[in-house]
Amino acid sequence: MLKDVRKTIAQYSKPDERFYSTKPFFGQGVDAGFVKALLPKEVGGSDIATLDFALATEELAAVDVNVPTAMLGSGLCIKPVAMFGTEEQKKRFLTDFAEDGTRLGALAFTEVTGGANFDSPDPRFGVNTFATLEGDEWVINGHKHYTTNGTGWDGNNCHLYAVVCRTDPSKNAEESLAVIMVPGATPGVRVTGLLDTAGHRATISPRMAFENVRVPANNILGKPGDGIKIVSTNFAWTAALIGAACVGVMRAAYDHALQFAREDSRSGPHPIIEYPTVGYMLADIKMKIEACRYLTWKACHQHATGQRGPSTSLP
Figure 1 (cartoon, one colour):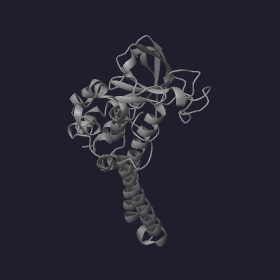
Figure 2 (tube, one colour; figure 1 turned 45 degrees about the horizontal axis):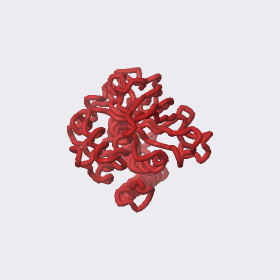
Figure 3 (cartoon, one colour; figure 1 turned 30 degrees about the vertical axis):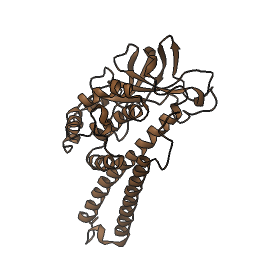
Figure 4 (cartoon, rainbow, N blue to C red; figure 1 turned 180 degrees about the horizontal axis):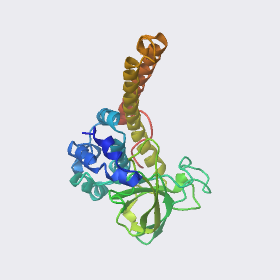
């Protein structure tokens, strides 16, 4: 499926064009069931185990990292609703993805000043995207970047955003951090720039502006203050899967190195793999890749069974 991706991407110089060129390959992934795997069964998904999805992620990433990254990017938007949304929210926000899996979702998480301090106990710092409750609507203002999938397939926003924000600038994350779902067609949501990411040559990472964006009050997942649990659980899920993607990339790099060592003699009488230094080095690398794979599987299993990490139940 993905073997032609690199040739397709290589035809384009701009990051948005490279990303848009992957849509047919993303569509093939949809047809194979990868997007429905992210969705709960009650909205038409298959909701496969995280470990099963990791196995598929590794295989895809071993060929090309961009298409599975787009799928995981949608997952970062979908999973908070699947894990923490009400039944009404699941049907309202996720049914569209089951009906047309090529729709893209995005997690609007990273502030333009960085995202590491999202759970800051000091209200002066951390997330600076704010949502103000006015009547029966949240009014959202702020800027995000590294918003994977945020452009959609045509530069006019993706289908849905999960926006990480605070509901009160005077309160810290524990009291006010929230995740609010914002449809991409909502007025005030716009792409303001693109980041050309190294390595992920056909992954789109736009900077997004949310300017007086109005959404219904019931678009919030849980309540203000639940954002820390939602974000942490969401990243625990994707971290395990990114581990699988990394194993896929490492595996591909190792295969290239192994082939080189078998074929190149560096002007000597034997291929360099026959020299102990090279052979032992490759053996050590292979063992580390295998260890990473099994640790990734362990993380996926423990996340699925709830043995580690934040609870997925909201009070």
